[in-house]
Amino acid sequence: MQLLSREKYDRWRAGAQVLEQDAYGEKVLHLADGTFLKLFRRKSWLSKTAFYTPAERFADNATELQKLGIPCPRVIQLYRLETPYRSVVHYEPLAGETLRHLLRDDPSLDQLELFARLAEFITHLHECGVYFRSLHMGNIVLTPDNQLGLIDISDMRCLGRPLSRRMRDRNYRHLLRYENDWQQVNPHIGTLFMFRTR
Image (cartoon, rainbow, N blue to C red):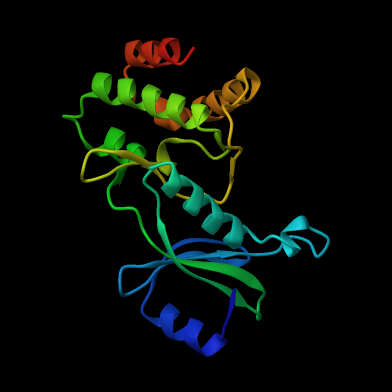
């Protein structure tokens, strides 16, 4: 993990679009060259993230997903910003549209086909041992070559063995709790989706 000087960060920041921020500062920057910076603060000095940062976890998860053939962002470099302290991942985004955007903006979308594929995709993730605690429509991307992939992958574990039924159910409950997403889905298709995932 390289040291990211404040001067270099400020140069990047000057030409960037801020995509996410909170009361503590910027969280995701879209840089002028099309790449992204994702910044993670340390919530506590006693946190386990002091030894294994979210940026490192993001990069390790990207490596594991690539081994499994699952599309995801490509990590360029990991950094450490000292003032304020942040672990930082610089990456190329995964091309495509999130399912959230497609459901909201594409009236011609074939929801029946999409959700049949989504059920197969999530089942494949679970069989491969991928437990993605932030699984929702905003983190699943349909790529230009018509594959489903994942973004925002720091909150993930790759266990190397199929998930238990309990972990699968927890993952689906997390997916279903985003009511605004499911309001865009035909209720009949949503029911079929849940039936296919059982």
